[in-house]
Image (cartoon, rainbow, N blue to C red; front, side):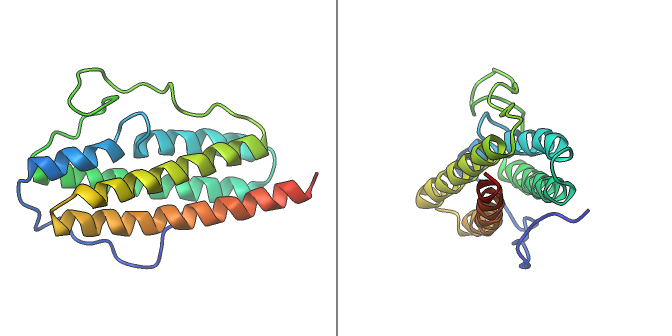
Length: 168
């Protein structure tokens, strides 16, 4: 199954040099309570419930989850090259390890989609905040490219929600 991503290449992380500040900035998107790890787990959970509702929609949700896994990979590799340990923690610079408390446990189509839309909107807003404070243009380009995927996910989820709203 292919990830649901834009048909554009991601900027390379190969040339990144140590830049702890930039690594710390992007760590908020990695594996924190509102980061890409939470998104991946939430989409995977919702995929199971969509499987009983609509197979095609379940596949779309899983394709988004796979895209979020790609983002985890890019962010983690970037953090490592920037000099930041890509740990699974609740909030950067803490010793409180990640937990699943913010993963949506919704089970109805409309609520799952609303939760997923909210997550994408928050992710886009958070990425824009990062871009505003990032001084490293290479890292900013990586974030900018990830945002394109998040915007695609948002539009896809909105179309899915419209379909379920019409069924009422």
